[in-house]
Amino acid sequence: MSIILGIDPGYDRLGFGVIKVVRGKISVLDFGIISTHKGLEFGERLFQIYEDLEEILKTHKPDVVSVEKLYSTVNQKTVMNVAEARGVIRLVAAKHGLAFHEFTPNQIKSAVAGNGSADKKGVQKMVTMILGLPRAPKPDDAADALAIALTAVG
Image (cartoon, rainbow, N blue to C red; front, side, top):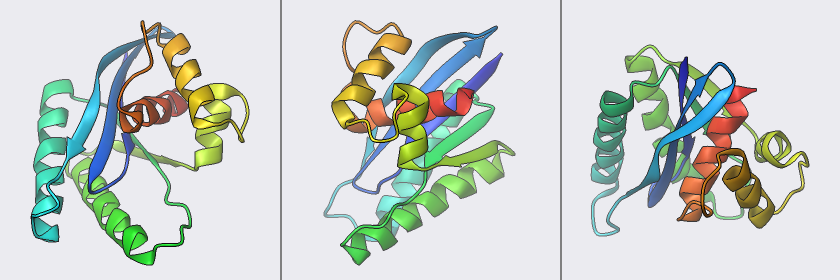
């Protein structure tokens, strides 16, 4: 048995998805988002992410943390802030001695949809189908996190 925590990194909204794999059968344990309030000082937002991730780890006890790699964007401030949130994620994973995997957006799309250039709707459709969910996970950040967790299944 393996429990995988997939994370779509962010600091305003961080998506998470927890799956369990038992003899090739995959089931969803939990998914959602960690939201931080824009009015908080940035360090406080990072601390909230830390505390919420600690609670998710305490609840689900994953073996693996998988995260989407940062990709280039126009807004450097956003990239830097997301990088800092990723640092918190790495810290929490290291604190708990968890395996840590990073995947590019194309790797995630290929693993889940079979096509590295799949659009968001195509990935969501495949996540829904693979996990046998009645409808696509909402919000999008949570669906992306489940796709990231599925990518770690290999």
